[in-house]
Image 1 (cartoon, one colour):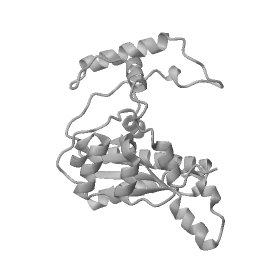
Image 2: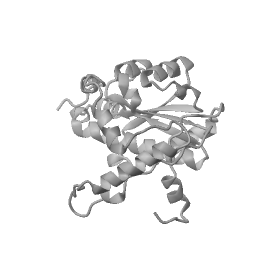
Image 3: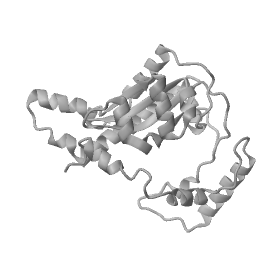
Image 4: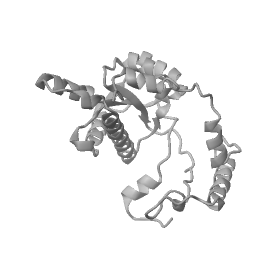
Length: 250
Protein backbone atom coordinates (compact mmCIF):
# COMPACT_ATOMS: atom_id res chain seq x y z
CA UNK A 1 0.00 0.00 0.00
CA UNK A 2 1.34 3.42 -0.95
CA UNK A 3 2.22 5.79 1.86
CA UNK A 4 0.02 8.84 2.32
CA UNK A 5 0.52 12.36 3.57
CA UNK A 6 -3.05 12.39 4.88
CA UNK A 7 -2.73 12.26 8.68
CA UNK A 8 -6.25 10.84 9.15
CA UNK A 9 -5.61 8.00 6.71
CA UNK A 10 -2.23 7.32 8.32
CA UNK A 11 -3.87 7.07 11.72
CA UNK A 12 -6.63 4.75 10.49
CA UNK A 13 -4.17 2.45 8.75
CA UNK A 14 -1.96 2.22 11.84
CA UNK A 15 -4.74 1.15 14.22
CA UNK A 16 -3.80 -1.57 16.67
CA UNK A 17 -5.58 -2.87 19.75
CA UNK A 18 -4.02 -1.81 23.06
CA UNK A 19 -4.46 -4.07 26.09
CA UNK A 20 -1.66 -2.81 28.35
CA UNK A 21 -2.03 0.67 29.80
CA UNK A 22 -0.03 3.07 31.90
CA UNK A 23 -1.48 3.75 35.35
CA UNK A 24 -3.04 7.05 34.35
CA UNK A 25 -6.74 7.84 34.24
CA UNK A 26 -8.27 9.94 31.53
CA UNK A 27 -9.25 13.44 32.57
CA UNK A 28 -12.86 14.56 32.66
CA UNK A 29 -12.13 16.79 29.67
CA UNK A 30 -10.74 13.87 27.67
CA UNK A 31 -13.81 11.77 28.44
CA UNK A 32 -16.07 14.65 27.40
CA UNK A 33 -14.18 15.00 24.12
CA UNK A 34 -14.54 11.30 23.35
CA UNK A 35 -18.26 11.40 24.10
CA UNK A 36 -18.62 14.48 21.89
CA UNK A 37 -16.84 12.64 19.07
CA UNK A 38 -19.33 9.79 19.43
CA UNK A 39 -22.24 12.23 19.37
CA UNK A 40 -21.12 13.60 16.01
CA UNK A 41 -21.10 10.18 14.35
CA UNK A 42 -23.58 9.37 11.60
CA UNK A 43 -26.92 8.18 12.99
CA UNK A 44 -29.82 6.43 11.25
CA UNK A 45 -32.70 8.88 10.58
CA UNK A 46 -31.08 11.22 13.13
CA UNK A 47 -32.68 9.09 15.85
CA UNK A 48 -29.45 8.82 17.91
CA UNK A 49 -30.36 5.33 19.09
CA UNK A 50 -27.55 4.62 21.55
CA UNK A 51 -26.27 5.61 24.97
CA UNK A 52 -22.81 5.55 26.54
CA UNK A 53 -22.10 4.46 30.10
CA UNK A 54 -18.79 5.40 31.71
CA UNK A 55 -17.96 2.68 34.20
CA UNK A 56 -15.88 4.06 37.06
CA UNK A 57 -17.05 1.89 39.97
CA UNK A 58 -14.18 -0.55 40.74
CA UNK A 59 -16.62 -3.29 41.74
CA UNK A 60 -18.47 -3.10 38.43
CA UNK A 61 -15.21 -2.91 36.50
CA UNK A 62 -13.99 -6.01 38.31
CA UNK A 63 -17.14 -7.93 37.42
CA UNK A 64 -16.91 -6.80 33.80
CA UNK A 65 -13.35 -8.09 33.81
CA UNK A 66 -14.65 -11.47 34.95
CA UNK A 67 -17.47 -11.49 32.39
CA UNK A 68 -15.22 -10.59 29.48
CA UNK A 69 -12.35 -12.81 30.67
CA UNK A 70 -10.14 -9.75 30.21
CA UNK A 71 -9.33 -8.42 33.70
CA UNK A 72 -6.79 -6.01 32.20
CA UNK A 73 -9.73 -3.69 31.39
CA UNK A 74 -9.67 -2.69 35.07
CA UNK A 75 -6.28 -1.05 34.50
CA UNK A 76 -7.37 1.06 31.53
CA UNK A 77 -7.63 4.82 31.82
CA UNK A 78 -11.38 4.73 31.21
CA UNK A 79 -14.03 2.17 30.34
CA UNK A 80 -17.15 2.77 28.27
CA UNK A 81 -20.08 0.45 27.65
CA UNK A 82 -21.92 1.21 24.43
CA UNK A 83 -25.65 0.56 24.62
CA UNK A 84 -28.20 0.22 21.82
CA UNK A 85 -31.00 2.42 23.11
CA UNK A 86 -34.63 2.80 22.04
CA UNK A 87 -35.81 3.45 25.61
CA UNK A 88 -35.30 7.20 25.26
CA UNK A 89 -37.45 7.22 22.13
CA UNK A 90 -40.00 5.03 23.92
CA UNK A 91 -40.41 7.77 26.53
CA UNK A 92 -41.02 10.31 23.76
CA UNK A 93 -43.70 8.08 22.26
CA UNK A 94 -45.40 7.51 25.61
CA UNK A 95 -45.50 11.20 26.46
CA UNK A 96 -47.09 11.92 23.09
CA UNK A 97 -49.55 9.03 23.34
CA UNK A 98 -48.13 7.42 20.17
CA UNK A 99 -48.04 3.66 19.57
CA UNK A 100 -44.38 2.66 20.17
CA UNK A 101 -44.62 -0.72 18.39
CA UNK A 102 -42.03 0.23 15.75
CA UNK A 103 -39.37 0.63 18.45
CA UNK A 104 -39.78 -3.07 19.30
CA UNK A 105 -39.11 -4.27 15.73
CA UNK A 106 -36.09 -5.94 14.21
CA UNK A 107 -35.63 -2.91 11.97
CA UNK A 108 -35.27 -0.52 14.90
CA UNK A 109 -33.05 -2.93 16.82
CA UNK A 110 -30.69 -3.08 13.87
CA UNK A 111 -30.80 0.72 13.52
CA UNK A 112 -29.76 1.02 17.18
CA UNK A 113 -26.97 -1.52 16.62
CA UNK A 114 -25.69 0.47 13.63
CA UNK A 115 -25.78 3.76 15.54
CA UNK A 116 -23.95 2.20 18.48
CA UNK A 117 -21.24 0.63 16.32
CA UNK A 118 -20.58 3.83 14.37
CA UNK A 119 -20.38 5.89 17.57
CA UNK A 120 -17.98 3.30 19.00
CA UNK A 121 -15.61 3.66 16.08
CA UNK A 122 -15.72 7.44 16.41
CA UNK A 123 -14.56 7.11 20.02
CA UNK A 124 -11.66 4.88 19.00
CA UNK A 125 -10.57 7.16 16.16
CA UNK A 126 -10.82 10.22 18.42
CA UNK A 127 -8.86 8.46 21.19
CA UNK A 128 -6.02 7.55 18.86
CA UNK A 129 -5.88 11.14 17.60
CA UNK A 130 -5.32 12.16 21.24
CA UNK A 131 -2.32 9.76 21.56
CA UNK A 132 -4.46 7.28 23.47
CA UNK A 133 -5.13 3.68 22.58
CA UNK A 134 -7.66 1.02 23.37
CA UNK A 135 -9.63 -2.06 22.48
CA UNK A 136 -13.24 -2.42 21.38
CA UNK A 137 -14.62 -5.39 23.33
CA UNK A 138 -17.47 -7.56 22.12
CA UNK A 139 -16.79 -9.87 25.04
CA UNK A 140 -19.37 -8.11 27.24
CA UNK A 141 -21.79 -10.31 25.27
CA UNK A 142 -20.50 -13.30 27.26
CA UNK A 143 -23.14 -12.60 29.92
CA UNK A 144 -25.50 -9.87 28.75
CA UNK A 145 -28.09 -10.64 31.40
CA UNK A 146 -25.53 -9.86 34.12
CA UNK A 147 -24.32 -6.73 32.32
CA UNK A 148 -27.93 -5.54 32.08
CA UNK A 149 -28.32 -6.08 35.83
CA UNK A 150 -25.01 -4.39 36.68
CA UNK A 151 -25.76 -1.28 34.64
CA UNK A 152 -29.50 -1.26 35.48
CA UNK A 153 -30.47 -1.09 31.83
CA UNK A 154 -34.20 -0.55 31.19
CA UNK A 155 -36.34 -2.14 28.47
CA UNK A 156 -35.43 -1.43 24.86
CA UNK A 157 -31.75 -1.11 25.68
CA UNK A 158 -29.00 -3.66 25.09
CA UNK A 159 -25.25 -3.63 25.88
CA UNK A 160 -23.30 -4.22 22.68
CA UNK A 161 -19.67 -3.24 23.15
CA UNK A 162 -17.15 -2.19 25.74
CA UNK A 163 -14.26 0.17 25.03
CA UNK A 164 -11.13 0.17 27.16
CA UNK A 165 -9.22 3.42 26.56
CA UNK A 166 -5.96 4.67 28.05
CA UNK A 167 -2.32 5.58 27.61
CA UNK A 168 -0.56 2.70 25.81
CA UNK A 169 2.09 0.91 27.84
CA UNK A 170 3.41 -0.81 24.70
CA UNK A 171 3.14 -0.67 20.92
CA UNK A 172 2.02 -4.02 19.51
CA UNK A 173 3.09 -5.04 16.04
CA UNK A 174 0.71 -3.95 13.32
CA UNK A 175 -1.41 -6.94 12.33
CA UNK A 176 -1.68 -7.33 8.53
CA UNK A 177 -5.13 -7.20 6.98
CA UNK A 178 -6.24 -9.36 4.07
CA UNK A 179 -5.71 -8.15 0.51
CA UNK A 180 -8.43 -5.79 -0.65
CA UNK A 181 -9.50 -8.11 -3.47
CA UNK A 182 -10.62 -10.66 -0.87
CA UNK A 183 -13.28 -8.28 0.44
CA UNK A 184 -13.75 -5.45 -2.07
CA UNK A 185 -15.68 -6.38 -5.22
CA UNK A 186 -17.14 -4.64 -8.26
CA UNK A 187 -20.90 -4.89 -8.80
CA UNK A 188 -21.30 -8.46 -7.51
CA UNK A 189 -19.91 -10.82 -4.89
CA UNK A 190 -16.81 -12.57 -6.18
CA UNK A 191 -15.73 -15.66 -4.21
CA UNK A 192 -12.00 -16.20 -3.79
CA UNK A 193 -10.64 -19.23 -5.61
CA UNK A 194 -8.28 -20.01 -2.75
CA UNK A 195 -4.91 -18.69 -3.87
CA UNK A 196 -5.29 -15.22 -2.34
CA UNK A 197 -6.49 -16.67 0.95
CA UNK A 198 -3.54 -19.06 1.00
CA UNK A 199 -1.22 -16.10 0.53
CA UNK A 200 -2.91 -14.30 3.42
CA UNK A 201 -2.62 -17.39 5.61
CA UNK A 202 1.13 -17.42 4.92
CA UNK A 203 1.39 -13.71 5.74
CA UNK A 204 -0.46 -14.13 9.05
CA UNK A 205 1.61 -17.18 9.99
CA UNK A 206 4.79 -15.16 9.44
CA UNK A 207 3.40 -12.25 11.46
CA UNK A 208 2.60 -14.45 14.48
CA UNK A 209 6.01 -16.14 14.35
CA UNK A 210 7.94 -12.87 14.19
CA UNK A 211 5.97 -10.47 16.36
CA UNK A 212 7.48 -9.18 19.57
CA UNK A 213 5.15 -10.91 22.05
CA UNK A 214 2.70 -13.82 22.28
CA UNK A 215 4.21 -15.63 19.32
CA UNK A 216 2.23 -18.60 18.12
CA UNK A 217 1.57 -20.85 15.15
CA UNK A 218 -1.65 -19.68 13.53
CA UNK A 219 -3.09 -18.67 10.18
CA UNK A 220 -6.22 -16.69 9.42
CA UNK A 221 -8.00 -19.88 8.32
CA UNK A 222 -7.01 -21.78 11.47
CA UNK A 223 -8.24 -18.83 13.56
CA UNK A 224 -11.64 -18.95 11.85
CA UNK A 225 -11.84 -22.71 12.31
CA UNK A 226 -11.01 -22.27 16.00
CA UNK A 227 -13.89 -19.78 16.31
CA UNK A 228 -16.23 -22.29 14.67
CA UNK A 229 -15.07 -25.01 17.03
CA UNK A 230 -16.16 -23.30 20.24
CA UNK A 231 -19.07 -24.68 22.26
CA UNK A 232 -22.52 -24.08 20.80
CA UNK A 233 -23.55 -22.91 24.27
CA UNK A 234 -21.30 -19.84 24.14
CA UNK A 235 -23.62 -16.80 24.12
CA UNK A 236 -26.53 -19.09 23.26
CA UNK A 237 -28.81 -16.90 25.38
CA UNK A 238 -28.27 -13.77 23.28
CA UNK A 239 -31.49 -13.97 21.28
CA UNK A 240 -33.60 -14.63 24.37
CA UNK A 241 -31.93 -11.76 26.23
CA UNK A 242 -32.49 -9.38 23.33
CA UNK A 243 -36.18 -10.32 23.25
CA UNK A 244 -36.44 -10.00 27.04
CA UNK A 245 -35.34 -6.39 26.62
CA UNK A 246 -38.29 -5.80 24.31
CA UNK A 247 -36.62 -6.05 20.91
CA UNK A 248 -37.37 -8.29 17.90
CA UNK A 249 -41.06 -8.60 18.77
CA UNK A 250 -42.35 -8.34 15.20
